[in-house]
Image 1 (spheres, helix red, strand yellow):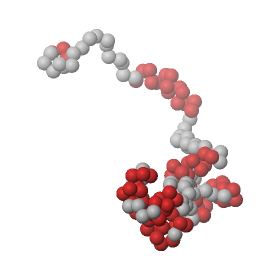
Image 2 (image 1 turned 180 degrees about the vertical axis):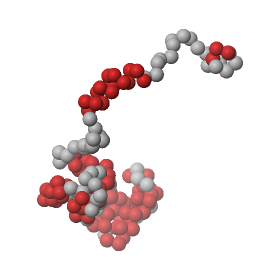
Image 3 (image 1 turned 120 degrees about the vertical axis):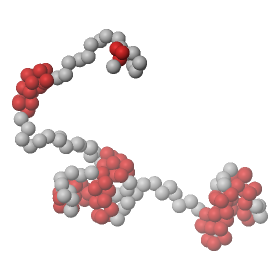
Image 4 (image 1 turned 60 degrees about the vertical axis):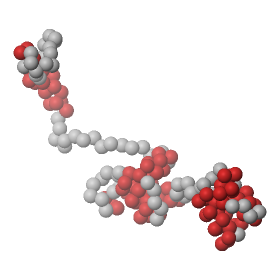
Length: 160
């Protein structure tokens, strides 16, 4: 499309006409014309899709080794890897910027999965919890309200 625009530049057509024929914005045509004037035909060639930044196989292997070392080694106060922390680590190690979502896609592509730590008290006694649920809870649980029809009206005495 840009090369078609160059042909039309050389033919002396106006930006508005070129934009209408190629069905692009006039601003794009203006930008292409400026690049064509400054650098010739090479200036308007597409640079390709920016896509997402890619890590090489060697960089992925290094990232996995660093993740296995744990967050404490990299300066975080606890042993949880979050996507934000991994994103920061990638930036520190490889000077490549990923979004949090992009970090998740990268990890997923390479076989990593999310895991949520179990949030349990250290001194938890599962047997005692089961006994409490079977014996104590039925006694202290509030009773269900009766299934009689009611009214939401504030003026009816039975609704108070």
